[in-house]
Image 1 (tube, rainbow, N blue to C red):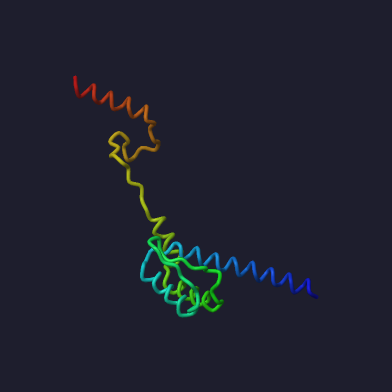
Image 2: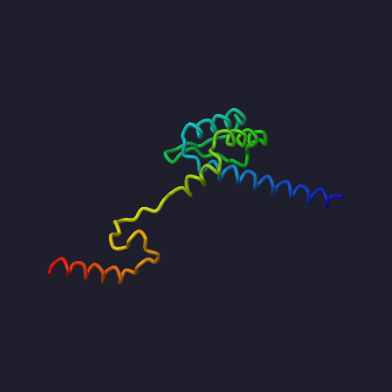
Length: 132
């Protein structure tokens, strides 16, 4: 009977750890200052006895010492205020190719791309025709 209780406790601890780790990872990605300030306010109101160290590098606290209700509140806040992942993926996939320099050698209707050596030969040929 005690082995079953111990194994349930281990599973609960690992799932709790993974949940805290996921929330911390989300918070580390946040760049908007107003969201970070709101999160600190949530933590301070829910955990008034928690010590928060502050210096030039930022604010530091032991994130694993928060009460469980704080994690719930933080998760809900993040769900409401962070952009959805599909929005991020759409912005990434809609980028288009822009070459560094215009490629005047390759015609738009060509089926195959030329190698650098072939392009150089064509440029030399055009230059020699131009100069003579």
